[in-house]
Each structure stands twice: as C-alpha cells, then as structure tokens.
Length: 63
Image 1 (cartoon, one colour):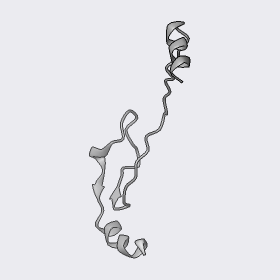
Image 2 (cartoon, rainbow, N blue to C red):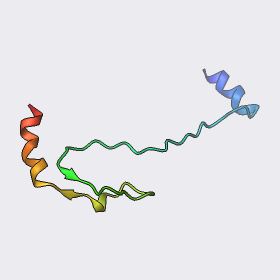
Image 3 (cartoon, rainbow, N blue to C red):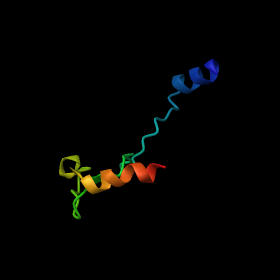
C-alpha cells in the first residue's frame, strides 16, 4: 500500500472526490410543526414550533 501511494503521489495521479447532496437529512421526534411554505435556502429551524397535540400523541405512538 505504501509503494502504491508513493507512486500515485509522485506522479500526480491523484483525485479528491468531491460530491454534493442537494438534500439535508434530519432525524427528529414528530412533536414540531412546520409552516406550509418552507424557506428555499435553509432548513428553517427558526420557523418550527412546538405542537402540544403532537407531543401528547408521541408516547402512545412510540409503543
């Protein structure tokens, strides 16, 4: 492995893969509500609010 890496680096045959995923992944409990129209360039955490009705249903749904 060391020799192969040496050859790659010496001869400048290396590539740094860069990729972009156009989505954001987020895990959360379903106790928040979000507006119908969401911001285009952000997740919009500051527009979420705590929903008392959803939070009350959560313990029963977790079973």
